[in-house]
Length: 425
Image 1 (cartoon, rainbow, N blue to C red):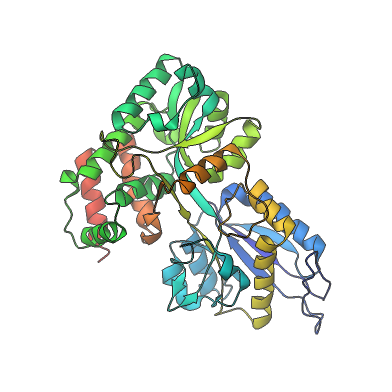
Image 2: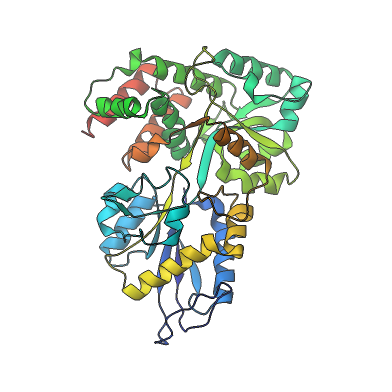
């Protein structure tokens, strides 16, 4: 995922729309930087900050692209050069960076965070991150396409097994459309698709985290693991019915929303963060999530759930930033989630599902409504990829890319996964 650095400077004590003010005791500009790890919201985020700049005189924002690095590499480089971001969009790197992050426990939003969303960001009773949003992934489907194929209103609960999924793919293909488009990005395959293999190991949180420890200790035989094999069975279907199966690594992320919108592909394995691109291609379309089944027992854990969680947090640097910068950073974060304009951008422009109970603006688009349906019915899976090391998704993603191109077989995927995790004891 592309990361951008937003450099902000300004000063003065002019109040913004929410009555917040800057440091009125000094006219010196307060320089802050914000590291944002989501390419999908880059444009609306830039627009939001531009509007924030107009509402107060503390910030002037410029976007500096990541230029090919991943988030952790960029953070490390910035810290090493004594240019640490003031505000950081951070996910799986948070435990590694905890000593560099400011305690945010005294912030009012902590009391309004949705249940469980602060667990990952809390260390020694200190809240080090503000939840960005609830995100979900699975098979995004174009309802109009599946309604046509089904000869009626498509019911996502009709697909609860691998055989159900295969039958649906066959029906879609028979109608002349590609059943699915698979984006071969390492983060999509190695973080999101791989998450399903780990979290579906058990409905019990302790047991699936024990599995993670056991694979690190070399005590897991993936070739004989039922969940791994079922998961690979599903990946085989995705591979066989992929719109780009003849050149799977040539598939472009930006093309997938267009394929989905115009019916070139009925489904896309992706997350709700892609909705802005889908909406741009099909403003009036109706979309939903289908879980990723990995067995032929409809009651097996994971076959009727989608992965939904907070994957990213906003954190503030305490190591290289000044108290004035930290205060400005807190103001900016509070404005983003506390002001009407900030909430409007979050929900209606970022297509984000709020991770707070007191949001006045709620998402109304069909894909968000689908996520809320699974959340309301307690049919969600943990994002265990938050516990992957920073090189986890690139490594596992590379293995799955090789599998897509027939340069690795199932046993090879199992071996490469095991070999990787053994180095993480």
